[in-house]
Length: 66
Image (cartoon, rainbow, N blue to C red; front, side):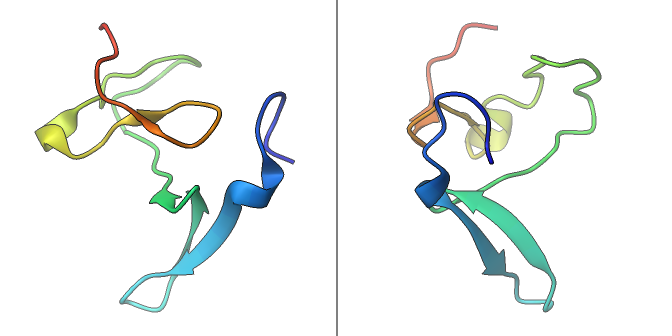
């Protein structure tokens, strides 16, 4: 589960304040950015200086080139 190079032990589920659940990786919530339309798109990278692509170890990549 999680794909090649992903440490499945870092995958988790978190309960949001509204009672719904979401997938996390290394404690980071995973989201789909609506303007990403193809595999590999990172249009939401750095959005509001909050949302970042994660590397295979689950750390935010804050300096990804667009």
